[in-house]
Image 1 (cartoon, rainbow, N blue to C red):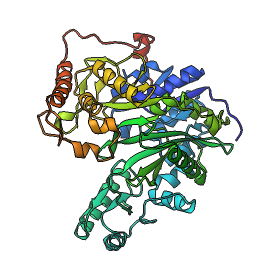
Image 2: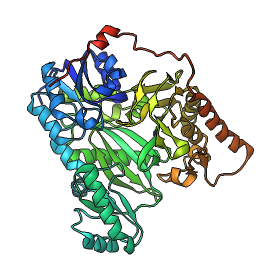
Image 3: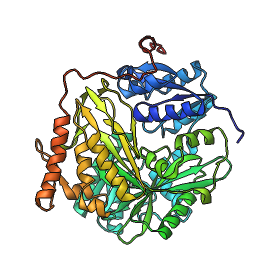
Image 4: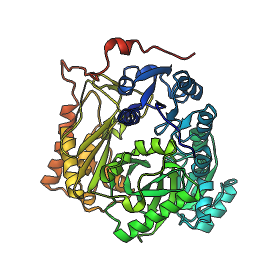
Length: 510
């Protein structure tokens, strides 16, 4: 690939990931262009960008998913490239193609790789052909209920029905016996159609008590592929990651090397370019299986950055411009341990229901070994239209124990007024004996916690010692006290954008 100069990037996203990309652009001397919906006119990513363009009403289908508006903005402002972030259009092969057809650089993999790895059945076929271990199951989508029953019986219960076109728990059903197949199949197909516009589902053998371990890879256009180690993402709720860390405490050096080499082979098998993630299921017998590939930058990429010292967004931009990777696998160095807690505007005392409203006061944690990737300022609104993620709080330590201790301190310092947040839940997890011992899997939240409406989140099946109860009560009380809005709270500003400039950003493409 011929090297291309990138001097101006349109960031086709919002929130903390848009801010993250803009910061990388600023450090590289690249002009950053933000797009925003009517609901995000005063958002942090808009304030930080060099230029900003309005692209439509608040609903994402009318703004952040409007491909023609985003492409028109990029062309009108003479951008060289588009960075999709994650979510929205990040893994949309049609959008990637349109970006290239418009003469722009798409900062991510090409459409072919997206299609191949975005479809779970074709991804499984590709991995099997490359000799990558895959969870036993079907290679193709199921034709109907009858085939689902035959395959499930042959595979052996329990099995998982999964959507071929998506992830994130949508179109997924656990089937424990033959009499559950028909209803589960219909439900999975219906949900998959609704979520992805594609009702195809397939079957995998259900792996009990697995851990979710993923490897970050980088691949350039010159045939070089490396991995940047693993992330442990097993603390999940409804198949959505909540807490991540790097490295995984369960892996030894030999297994880490084997899984890393397998991740590299997986990326090579699909001729992948740019940053991506190979996700594995890791069972009780210490066997690992390919789960899926995410053809984009991951939400949890900061923990990898913290232990490698590499900026993954800058790496993406350099790869997209045609540069060779600046380091070999042997030159990748790992140092210390990092933990990430996702700070959501959700109420953990009420089944984690989203909590909308105005952030009357927001003061993130800081100090040694603490990083907060946020897309919000005091005075911003947590809208019903978008994901309720406020920020990603990340701590680094020389070892896992220090990283966790720093996370406890950081969570205790974090101040959010105006909405309920996941902070008290994260505080409890950071003191939970099983988490501290590294003894957990993807069922950790279901096994250890129960949510009771209008009561505090409490651990299920834990001891009743005074210290344990006090720790939980203190976390909930601290959060409840801090969530009350304080009179006279002052709204902050970005400091480098004047009011007239913000008000003047009313350019809208028609």
